[in-house]
Length: 39
Image (cartoon, rainbow, N blue to C red; front, side, top):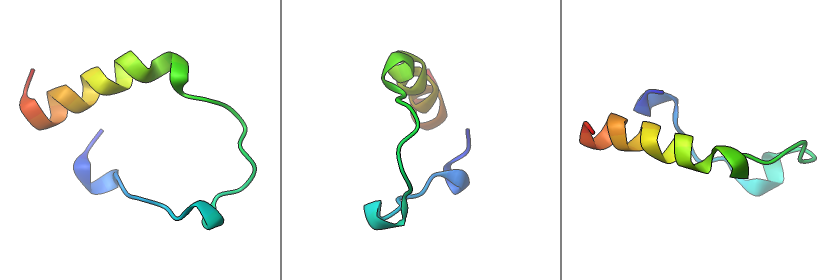
């Protein structure tokens, strides 16, 4: 992951939801911690 690829998207531009990332919450949080904080 790189910060230049992260962006906010207005909800009205999104299409029908196809899944959830809830199961990957810990992995995503760890990746963001590494990216922003270095640990």
